[in-house]
Length: 85
Image (cartoon, rainbow, N blue to C red; front, side):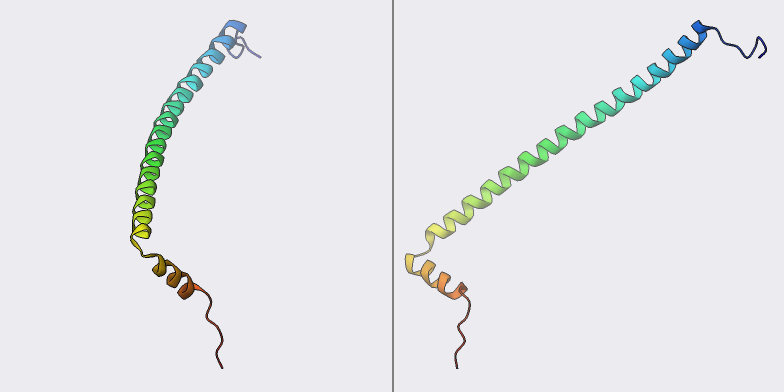
């Protein structure tokens, strides 16, 4: 090897540090994006949970408005049909 191709240990360490710094910056950007994504998904989850809760409340309110015999008739109507000769 010629003198120009050889790198000193300090130069090798400096190159490695530079590569590590570049990788560190990439990881910081990735981490920031992931934090934003988690926040967005958490907000979406909370919104969906709220909508589900509201829908359940509406269904319960509708069920409460049905007369007792209507729920029995609905259960009977939803039962499998009987074969009649």
